[in-house]
Length: 99
Image (tube, rainbow, N blue to C red):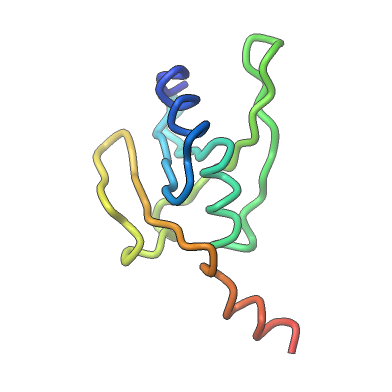
């Protein structure tokens, strides 16, 4: 798993960024607030729970990085993506669905 302390520190004060981490299994994951924000951008994204060391439960979403809207990417590397999130991401698509 990504460096847990760094990830938790980021998520505690996260108010507009999405952090996606590449894990040892080669898959990409977003946690906590980042996972929630990403689920607002990609409605079909499924949020789940990740239990760490039988004590800490985290919201987690597995991410297909090929589906990330490139205009939202602030930076990326082989181990991490950072995206910009605005509260209205996905709002117009949601509005179109309910009409």
